[in-house]
Amino acid sequence: MVFDRILDPIFSPLLKLDPLLAILIISFAITLLINIIYKLATDQKEMKELKTKQKEFQKKMKKLRDNPKKMMEMQKESMESSMKYMSKSMKPTLYTLIPIIIIFGWLSANLGYIPIDMHEEFTVNAMFSEGVEGEVELSTIPESIVFLSNKTQNIEDGHVVWQLKAEERGDYTLLFRKGTAEVEQDMRIDEYKSSQPVEKHKNSVFIETTVSYTKIKPLAFTGIPWVKDWGWIGAYILFSIVISIVSRRLMGIY
Image 1 (cartoon, one colour):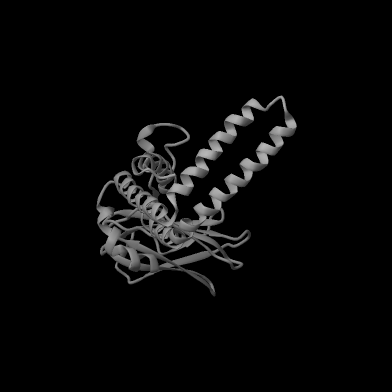
Image 2: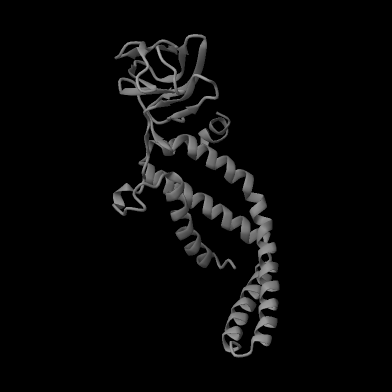
């Protein structure tokens, strides 16, 4: 909710786009901002000299493979140069760390799952601790969600599934009640926004409750086995690496 209040005015229009395009735009904006801050917060002349030294050390060490003693000395100098470069690079990273964490929180909350809109059927599942039996009741606040299955059902094989449909958009609270044990889960009915699908519970009756949101897989179109199931974070990392490499060269960043 905090992330929504801070970033909704900026990023909410992107939720109307295809998730792949939205993540690409956000990746470009964040990477470009990071690179600009990095360039302004570092002495690029010094960074270029340090990087040039590192390349020279690598070339020299290749020629010293037959001279272990000299090679060890060169490795020590190379390591010192690398550590200096890394320490200089850390300063701009600290400037961007907190904003990036906030943005990642917003992305996780809004681009993790496909929203459930009004009039769409969805399911809610509750899992119970071993040995828990009997009836369990589900209700909602407000009550503008239509139950397509009975509100009260018997636990079978440790879980219960309800089928529902919302008549209005908005934020809802699901109330699960088993005897005196009661747990809650927040969910959202919205054209563009979803909420976290799984709520873990720490009591002797309920283990977790789940809303049937479908995970967004922006790279599913690739068909590549190890890529097609990636969520927003995988797509963001892939895009940001490519964008960073290209933009750093164009901006002359070392």
